[in-house]
Image 1 (cartoon, one colour):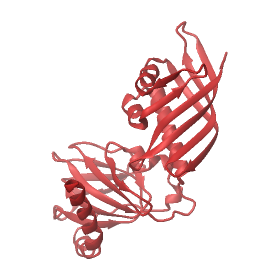
Image 2: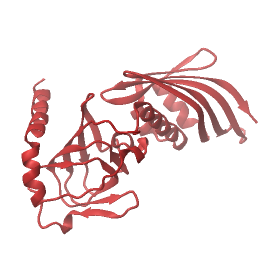
Image 3: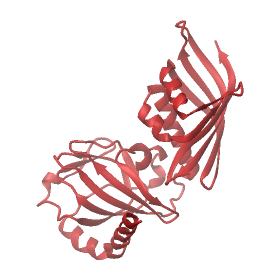
Length: 277
């Protein structure tokens, strides 16, 4: 409780003092970035989805999303965006390079007049897809308070759930165990067409041992109700059998996602269908 109260105090301090701090610090130490129309940015490139190792949700409600952002020395983030304007409270940072989606340099901190006067507070508009490379031998650590605003024709919560599902399917095909475990809820249940069920651990084991070569989702319908989302659709799963034959399974599926701690988790899956020659 003490730790949470300290965190809440920090967030409130950032929000209350940000205007004065921004006016004072941005004029002396600008950190340029690229903005644009968030409606044109893919939902799957949201920071929490595309770069989860660097962005952890500390709190989220209808008004704000508070992210803890960390990068270890010499690390490069995955390409991602921030669809809402935000206040950054930078606690630790050395030299870094920020690049846009095409790899062009947006800024190189080595070209600044001097180091950031840490801790450093600043304002940023919605930030287009970009990737930061930590050039230093020390970590980068900051708190980003994203102020949620309606985005005209932007990514809806349904689109975010579909983006999570797309990321999970890619992880199945590439056998990315870390991503599978990150998205799967601890209470995950896979209901087989024969009536048997499988939990999270056995499902991960089965996916890693399956010679899957591809998977295509189609005919998807998603319904979001608060912290629960249901997707119904079809999938064609391509894999190599034990006999070395290429096989495709055409399946109908229903998946259930639940939102925990501001992040969507894969909670349940039901499949039935047949193999195609």
